[in-house]
Amino acid sequence: MSAPASTTLVVVPTYNEVESLPVLLRRLRAVHPDLPVLVVDDASPDGTGELADQLATADAHLVVLHRAGKEGLGPAYIAGFHWAAEHGYDYVVEMDADGSHQPEQLAALLDAAAPDVLVLGSRWVSGGSTQDWPWHRQLLSRSASWYSRTLLGLGTRDITAGYRVIPVALLEEISLENVESHGYCFQIDVLRRIVAAGHSVVEVPITFVERTAGKSKMDLPIVLEAMRRVTAWGVSSRLGRG
Ligand SMILES: Nc1nc2c(ncn2[C@@H]2O[C@H](COP(=O)(O)OP(=O)(O)O)[C@@H](O)[C@H]2O)c(=O)[nH]1
Ligand SMILES: [Mg+2]
Image (cartoon, rainbow, N blue to C red; front, side, top):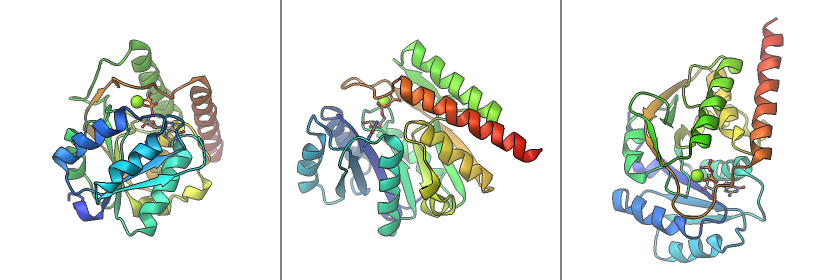
């Protein structure tokens, strides 16, 4: 079953994406002219939030959520998910602002959407790939997926994938208020909770394209948070299993 446009909200978190955001929205509108979009901006110093407001005046399906300051990807997405639930959406799409998640591939993800399924745009399944992504980022992504898969006993290939379609009902079921992850391990956290709740994960191959403008917000504290939390989850689930 595919997710109908009227009940699907694309959530785009932004921090200092003033160059990338308008390009992304133009590309998205070329393929999905009426799909509702929520930009969640953490008071970007480069004026991304103000630019998004301007773009929203000319786009009836674009809304901007302004947050007080940079708190990380997790809290930005959680704010977006609450907004989606409050406004009656059935599905949310997670999409980066920097063009790495190609809007032209969204239709394939939406086609795989179903009420009890988490859909991931996956780099590390057959047919998936990356383009111009530095070798050290590929290594980090593959290692993080391997480490998380092994420790958490998950079958997913691309565990940190950030291009997703998630049923809002599943997000409500996994108690988002207990998700403490701030950085990119937020993605691992949501995935493991959805799997633990008995739902399935479908990986749709995508080509992840390196950004051509702006800077990555990935840094060492984000990597360390992920390692620390994944290790703790793995250890406690093993102890729990006795
Ligand atoms: N609102 C918000 N967005 C963020 C934050 N950190 C990263 N992002 C956004 O999350 C997306 C992915 O971040 P990016 O730096 O491209 O990560 P990378 O692709 O792993 O290098 C981009 O759209 C960023 O602007 C944050 O703290 N707050
Ligand atoms: Mg990126």
